[in-house]
Amino acid sequence: MSIDNSVKQKLISEYISTPTGRAKLAASMTQPLRLRRDYMAVGRKTFLVEQLPDGALPIYDKDPDVTAFVVGEEGENIVAITKPRRVIFPLFEIASNPEIPLTQIKERRYDLIERAQDLARAQIQAAEDERVFSVLDAIATTGFDSVSGGINPDIPVVAPISGAVLADAYGLIERHDLRVARVFMNAQDYTDLRKFGRDILDIESQRDLLKTGLMATLWGAQVIVSRLVPVGTVYATCEPEMFGRIPVRTELTVLSADDPKARTIGFSVFENLGIGAYNPKGLSRLTITR
Image (cartoon, rainbow, N blue to C red):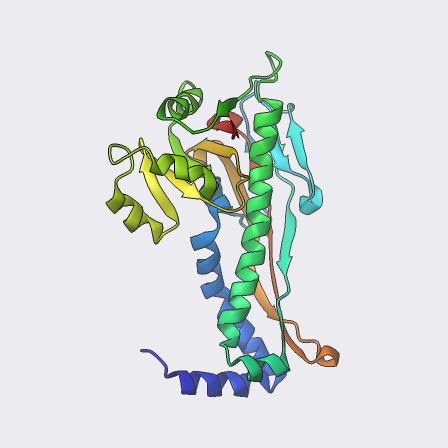
């Protein structure tokens, strides 16, 4: 059952006027914001997201002859772990604090809930995706075989991207008995794929999958375009459950965080999680020179 906009605005105005009402607004945002974040954040398509039970530690087994790469404490650096075989993924917090001046609520006539969700989703999504791609870059730069001295999964390419080069990237992953599931690239590099023709990327698939953020399917793998992927870089990854994990201790939560002195309505949006790859054999990267 849909609510008329005038009724919705009246309810929001009533809630804004009291601390209890603002707390209700924050609580009502939590689940829709999770869905919006999951819909847009490409990092959560790279690794398997796992909710940690109370008291459980984010400990995972890796292959003894490879290096695991995890986001370190406070989410500020990438840590390479060669030994021991069992790896603990450090947990850190990602937070966003969207604030909306009370005067703008009346001036702009926009939906307070929608506006706050847009701000929070964009910041949380960007923070997650930046750390995921930092892990992928660390794997491609360092190599992952700790026994033979480092196998480099990076392929230098001179633009434009060709089907043969992409096939080589797939082969680097498939030789480890893994299936390529995702290909991540910037919109500028995706233009090369559009020039492949209907034999690989038909127009109907592009139109249908554009709505979900999955731009196309290439040899069974979903091609995903994101502005957070650097121009000149293409990542191919295996199935999320075989590649790494995003252990979540505290799922995305929204609290009321007003600032009376600044006359702003605010929300504190946060989550506590870890990010890492315990099987870096599931990655190959194209580095493109244009």
